[in-house]
Length: 230
Image 1 (cartoon, rainbow, N blue to C red):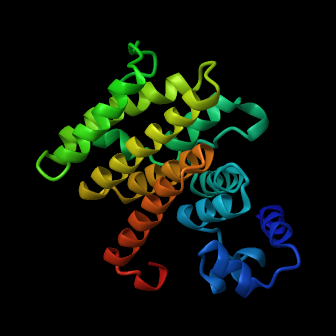
Image 2: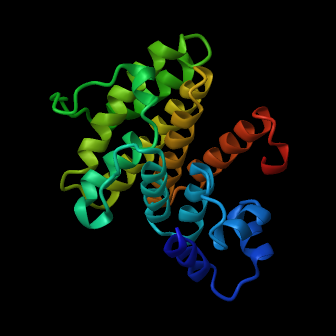
């Protein structure tokens, strides 16, 4: 825990706690306690620090290891023990096991025929139209099936504009998975999907998707009775 606290302090550098907390959109008092080793940051706080410091999920993974050791849960592997592909998968499943309850996850080994970029775009448009009229569980199953397929395509040898578009679409699927998870009362899963959407927005360099993530994040905080974080 002390090493974790020092890492966050190092990332803050010479900036004031107040200024750093405001820019990273975390609570100043909580940040102080985290740096003093008195508090383990929440999943949401670690994700926001990762996003602001561009640490590619390092703090979230570190936080989950500490939490697992404290609670007697299986300890996730370190960054050195997993590859880039495994890390993306673990980042989702390890942080929000409750997501499995949302959609009855398809088996990791299931073969999914890769759709075309146009098919993915059309599917997302259909999900957007159906969101307000389709039961959340049904929509989540559909969205996650295509989201996983898109992630598998990203794990392949795709470059340039194709990769940018796939990152954008994976982020859009993640937004809808966050919304449906929230509708089903699965807060941990919704937060994790939303964090993943933010990562994809950064990778795609898409400001509109980043804005959508921020808007959904703000609405979640408001309706969870945390208006000061909205």
